[in-house]
Image 1: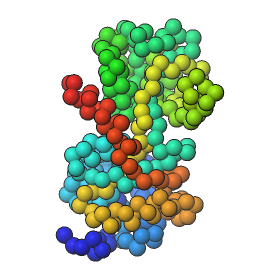
Image 2: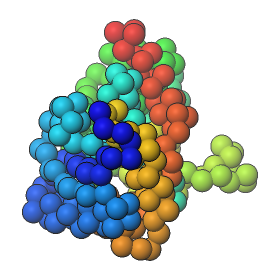
Image 3: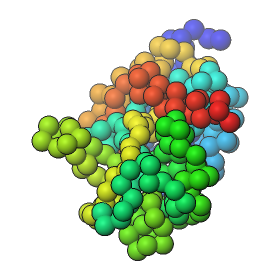
Image 4: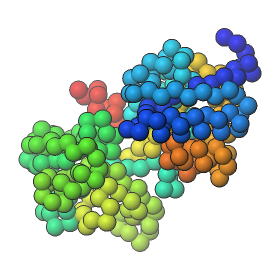
Length: 274
């Protein structure tokens, strides 16, 4: 491998959205801005799924990749990638998952979870399925008894609609909170998948990193650090604006082990128990 200071070309990989041409244009703008900020030659590569992106990281075709939290966590645990930054959205770099019911529902506590219809986003959703179920299992909940039907709606908005209209008894979604000493829980919800609806939160789990910019373990540490500094230091400059367009990020923070550890431990416990 060439010395660290000689790594001057990087490829950034992302999964394309339902507007692939728009995604490619935003990726090109981000790569140009990152190139200007670091002095590296930066190219973009759009893939159709995360398996393809992870393969590209392993082969060295991609050096940096934008990954959802569970994909990043599993790739990190297998020593494939190194998380370098997390995006800040709505003032936070992480969020939680919540199981909720309409405020008028008699379902108030975890002990009330018996024979219910559960609304989920999809089987790959961190906040809308995986983490909440892992949390319930960690509390000793028998999921087969708790939920007689598992219904998948494809989005957090549709989950909320199902719960509020009575097509499901409970639903899982994301929650952003901030400290509030006056609240019984010591914090209050500032944004959630149910928006302004009147609901009761049965249980929460987290934190869950919003997303992760990860580097292949093939990338020299000095190169990772230079990219990390550029992203964390970006504000309302060209790089910051390009990041907002491509990733919806209002800023970045350095990725630390504590950002992923709680999620990793929860998922590891679930997988070890089968």
